[in-house]
Length: 73
Image (cartoon, rainbow, N blue to C red):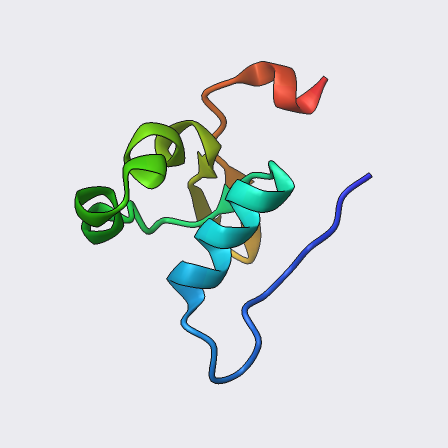
């Protein structure tokens, strides 16, 4: 089961994404490396790289760049 969330209007997106990843134990699809957050938040520094899934959009197709292939099995 997959649920997609977007930060609500007038909500800081980084904070929304990090809070959800932390509380809900979920992945983040983002090309943001959250470098500033890693400097100021120990949970983010320790966890964000394994929870963040970068992506590319090429000719209208979305490609997720998965390090852990078990996510698609």
